[in-house]
Length: 257
Image (cartoon, rainbow, N blue to C red; front, top):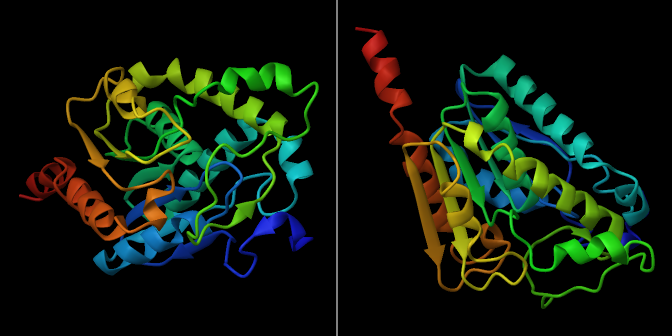
C-alpha cells in the first residue's frame, strides 16, 4: 500500500472485531476515512462487554484512485455483509456510523427490521452544495477541502476525489427514499462546529423515519468528526445509555418469565 495518500498513516485503519458478549455493535466509518475514525468510540464502549465490529469499506485505505472507481452500492453491500458476520456471533446487533457510515447504518435499519436501534454521528444526509459534484467530476479530479485541517486522530485520504463525492450524493438520494421504512429507534449526534454537513441533517432524518423512539443531541464545540474530539466521553456515555434504555431489553426479560 502506498501510504503517501493517507493522513496519519501510523494509525490502525484495518477492519477489526472486539470479542465480547452476545450483544453486538456494528460501527461504520465515513467517506475517505478508515476504521481509525470509529476505533476510539469502540474503545470507549468496549468495557460494557459488547462485541464490536468495524469493517474497512471498499475503496478505502488504499488510494484515492481506488475510491474514485468504487460505487455506493459496494458500500451498501459491505455494510450488509458486515452485519451478517456480526449477526452470526450475536443474538442482538445494533448499528451505528459516522457521516457516510451513518447513512449505511440507516440503510441496514431499513432492510433489517430486527435491528433494535441505530445511532448516527454527524450523518451526511445533507451536505452543502454536494450536487455540484455531478458537474465538477468532468472538469476536476479532486475537490478542494472546505474545512480546516485539525489535529484529530483521523486516518484517511488527503485527496477528496470528485467521483467519490458523486457516489455519496447518489447514496444520499438512495437513503432518503428509504427513511420511512425505518421503525427502529434512532439516536442522532450533531456537532455545531461541523463544517461538512448541514446542522439540519439530524432533524431531517428524525422527521422522516417511522420510529416512535428518537433522540437528538447537539454539542456546541464538536466538529464533524465528533467521535474523535473532546466530547467523545459524553457521546459514548449517551450512546450506551440509549442502547441500554431501549425497550428490547424489557421484551427479552419478559420472555424469560
